[in-house]
Image 1: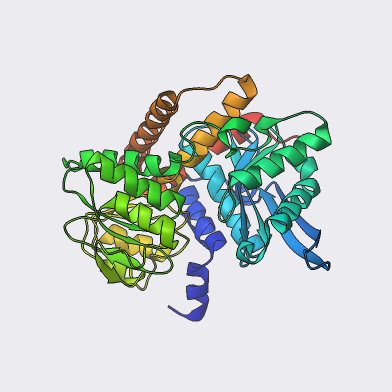
Image 2 (image 1 turned 45 degrees about the vertical axis):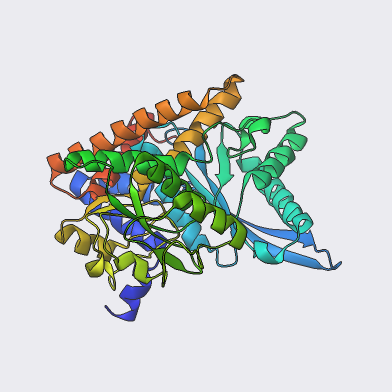
Amino acid sequence: MGATDAEKEQSVYESTAARFDAAADKLKLDDGLRKYMRCPNREIIVHIPVEMDRGELDIFDGYRVQHSLARGPSKGGIRFAPNVTLDEIRGLAAEMTWKCAVVNIPFGGAKGGVVCDPEKLSRGELERITRRYTAEILDYIGPERDVPAPDMNTDEQIMAWMMDTYSMHVRHTVTASVTGKPLDLGGSRGRREATGRGCMIVCDQALKRFGRTRDGTRVIVQGFGNVGSQAARLMHEAGYKIVGVADVHGGVVNSRGLDVHALLDHSREAKTVKGFAGGEPIDPEEILEQECDVLLPAATENVIHGGNAARVKASILVEGANSPTTPHADEILFDRGVFVVPDILANAGGVTVSYFEWVQDRQGYFWSENDVNRRLRRIQVAAFDDIVRYGKNHKVNNRIAAYMLAIDRVAFSLRHRGIYA
């Protein structure tokens, strides 16, 4: 590929747009709806003044993109990172629209971000950035408009500050204004494990299609943040054999299976899986090409691309991260017969339980963890079956089937709502 193609392959927005176009072509979507659904509903750019601990004023750029409001309020995370771009946020917001539609929950998609490096900020600086960012986008968010959630480098504390800032402005506590909050501030049981649990649920369904069982199924997890670590723990406890794990600093492999609980203890202490004594060290990039049955990328975008897709040895790919596979890699994996569970289904456990949190906050009644997990399983199993059936009927791979199903559902809402003028 030339430089231009390589750059496009690494763009979340370009990847999402390419998949949308492929699915829209298969659906024979008319030009007017295609233009409408390709464009975000609203893009907000804010410049956040913050007094730093050193006494000087700094300005941080912030974004919130609301892609669709056709099926309900928009929904999506807030990320804090030095490399956040509007292009990235725009692509991830669109993905959230399709993700919510795939699991058939009444939200549209949104995404937000602030360009900053949390590792270089004090707790006080983080709080001031969060509160001012919330205040700047206040007119566009809320339980009936747009419901933020945690994402890269944001957590329960960030969400608590956002909820408090929103509540102070409207002069009463509005727990449903964000999700991913601490349990005692209106959070939901099962939320922390939801994305990892959802990955295991769809992996279970994939195994059933091939007449296989959990016992002895070899899994490699790339990324050991909340999603990867929870998926590894839950799958280990359920009987899967976790043979490799990596994070940004390093990796570890053991063909006999890793002791995931010991690895979690090591990771909490060392802040990395690197150096774990229960396996052999490996380069984080090389772990994607090791022998396994299931590969679960759970870190960041574009880790499986045209340069390494042909060397992936797994027969099942479960995408715990957003956009871990580029469109070019999709073609290679499909040609090789790899069964891909796309991100807009595989990692939809998080947004599904966020929806549960929003519902519980609005009704003021909270469910047990068993109830949450039971409802999550029902939704993800139904979505998995819908996608596989859609793919079979239309003779497309799982990713395009998922996009077709999602686009079809959003298009139905737009056609019946009509255009207000």
